[in-house]
Image (cartoon, rainbow, N blue to C red; front, side, top):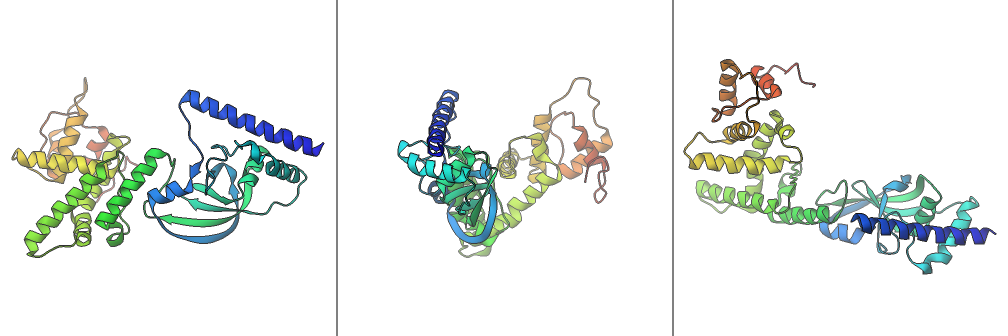
Length: 328
């Protein structure tokens, strides 16, 4: 009877896998089980360390080492030849027999099964919330968090390529350059090469890529990133990153220079804000005092605008004094 129930459980799990896959195809959402090998190649493995035995949330086990096609994304079995082993485990686990710990790699917020695929599959089918696991923490050159879909892996591969060319993570380990679109790391690397060229002219010597990357980060990127944070610029542009805004600001800085207008990162930020805010109906214009403060902080306005209330409050607060209307 128990063997019959175990076989029935296996067939039920396979039917669930089929229905889940069919529904995913109809919805256009066909995410497979994550492949550790693909993730490792994209983000570039840097090292690993054993962190001990712990109970791992089964919902966070979403990848496999070497067997991504034997189970679906919910760890339901997809091949009929897996029936015997799966049914034996199902029967044993229903009897309450002790389950040997599985072995997993932990990367970002995802666990990849190295050993114990059937145990995870059966445990999930039986409604377990956690499972004992020996955990190996993995470090990659490009950080990976959230959904590790094809686009995220491609972006990680681009980031690794950028880091290998620029050596930025070696000379400035604290630097984290994230972009929202593919192809933008090439543009940032072009900026580093330009910075290297002018460093060479000023210092009458050959400047290494690593030295240029460190100087670019310290003297170009970080000051602009600090301005972006100081003025909460990202609040005005949802879905964008500091590096996205850096590219936009430096492009606007160049445009202002070519137009022979006051140019610099602060002036570029001002120009972008004045361009995107527009004028609201019935809006009360900012006072001359506020505009004077903005001119001193951000550069002269080049359009008539309605300033957002938060920006007005920030401009009206003298430097060194907190903006009491904003949370700390």
